[in-house]
Length: 334
Ligand SMILES: Nc1ncnc2c1ncn2[C@@H]1O[C@H](COP(=O)(O)OP(=O)(O)OP(=O)(O)O)[C@@H](O)[C@H]1O
Image 1 (spheres, helix red, strand yellow):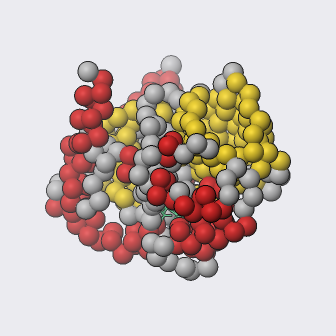
Image 2 (tube, protein in one colour):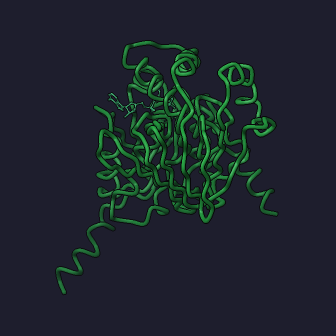
């Protein structure tokens, strides 16, 4: 009985209800995480935010830091990074076993390259306004996706908070990561990866189960979205709603390379579905098999290849959003 009493009290003793744990990826945004941290830190301090902080030291370290932060009583976490950092923190929130995932509040200060997750929530880019948003704490419960895939014959599971791209989109992700590893930088890097992949990538025969439906088609690319953006501002899933319990899956059927190049603007202007070979389906459960295997990027990270399964976990993580997004979400509910 005495032991039980102690066990119940111990986590409460160390609860840090109002203190944020800040996890900084120094490599995000080609080193912006490291370079801008002194400014971000000074901004947090000047606005009276209570926090402790830690830098990631390697890939996936943010997963570990999140699990130990929650085990040490933190319930509010700030990601200083890009989509990959947010993704690792979300995976850490699911891995920990101390509290339900919805009891953790996730905020972000976007210093990444693409920052697509932050775009959906209209989070401010300047650090002063981003910190104000954390103080105002407009929160929102968003859906999370769980993907299964293969990487060199090993089966993996990973949660995602924003979007997954498969086929051509996945190939661009792999090329983009490769260019970054080679030390290439700059805002045109994604376009460079896209043009390179366009030269070498071919549509594949895809067999998919989408909830109750089955499809067989030659598919060039597909994007599953919880958020609306991917690829650093592309609107490939422009109508995705991040708390509707459904993926929006944009399917781009086999296209000529010229047709892809000519239609690049519709990837950015929200009119992607005007194209006759592009359509959208909405579903909770999706299974995909392809010949040959197709590559996948998940929240901007090139991670593996098919066969894939995707499932949605509705309203699973509480996130801090921008005031404009919150107002729009509230007026949509009226
Ligand atoms: N200390 C570190 N050293 C090397 N890599 C790291 C470190 N910390 C995190 N990473 C890795 O950095 C990668 C990129 O992080 P992140 O996605 O946050 O930035 P980004 O790629 O610039 O932004 P975005 O995904 O929004 O374009 C992730 O794969 C992450 O695992």
